[in-house]
Image (cartoon, rainbow, N blue to C red; front, side, top):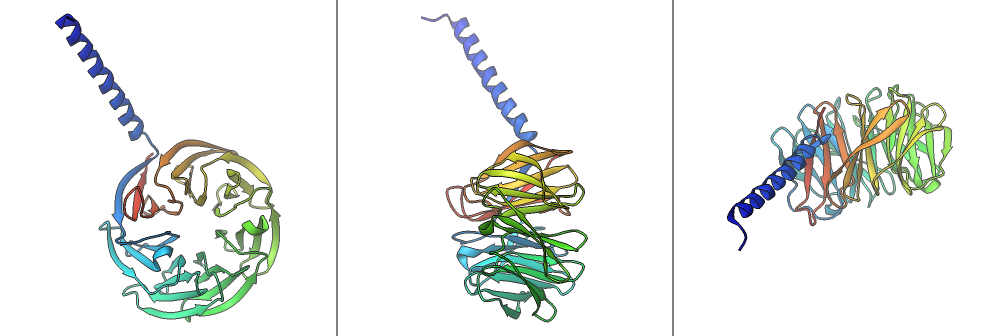
Length: 335
């Protein structure tokens, strides 16, 4: 029979070891650069979830629920679903223009952009673009909405009149595109052409074309402080920084797979990349180096997100699946 004292000592040592392991795991979690703060359920939403936009004044988040033909309206203040807008046709992109209090929804199936008032969400207009209406960006200076669509084009819309202002033709369907902070240029991912197009915002004319030696350039952000355009590629999965002046590569770092959104946290000199592989990669920036400091688990297919600096939140769209029902996961960055 084992000696009782030795048994007690072994049990105590084992308990201390388990406690130490648990404490270490908790400490590592506490030090993570993103902390999961809440999950807001989206109701009975099935299928793919695409991009998001925000009404900052009301703290309302708009979620393009493409596979469900709906847009979810989330009240971030109360951490709850406020309502669901129905009757859409594969909504891919959403945008909110504050001066006209207009919500715009781009629909892939019929190529339309529907407009709603920002208070009661009553439909106020529609613009036909032909096919595959996709990402929406708001030009705050011009108070216009810009929509990528079809086999290659950007449509400039006036939310006040629900009319097209002009069209910028492109070589292929545009994925993520970003407006330079000075409003002069628009940088456009063209994965089917393996290129980035640079468009003059005032005229809609192509002013430059940057050929890419990688594939799947879907996600993009502009780092104005460093004069760079950041692109997350899927093939191979890499984050690449290009000089904003001439498109030359200045830095490359491996990242997670199936990336669809990338955002810059200027306050902390960080970059967040959300991936359908089920992670958010967090990078620290220093001069020309991008160093991954964390890989935060999310859920398979959770590749779209929105970083809101004004609220200091990274919002990740998680579709219904093994991780649970469809929801928006709210991550709070840590210092």
